[in-house]
Image 1 (cartoon, helix red, strand yellow):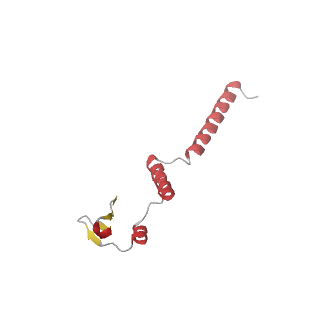
Image 2: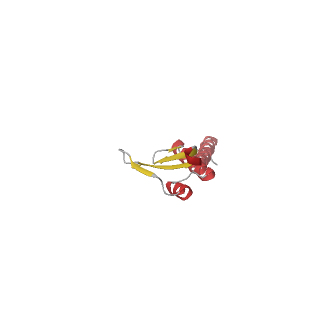
Image 3: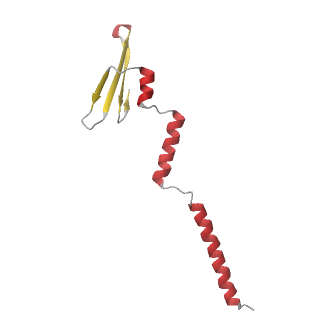
Length: 100
């Protein structure tokens, strides 16, 4: 016959082991805050259709002006003026951000 004190320790160890395994299985799929943010950012970009440099080229054609910045980035400018220059738009794409 097993002494009652030994049974209790075994039961406690079993409960501890089960709780540990449960916690490990739940934590296995957890991401760091930075990883969750990157995943969210990727999903949002896909959902709203953030354009790449190639996307702007397809939509607006060849830029009127291309400039290299001091830090190695680049900026492209597209311009359109309609009605003899009375109306129009200017778009600027930069490797850092998009400006309208």
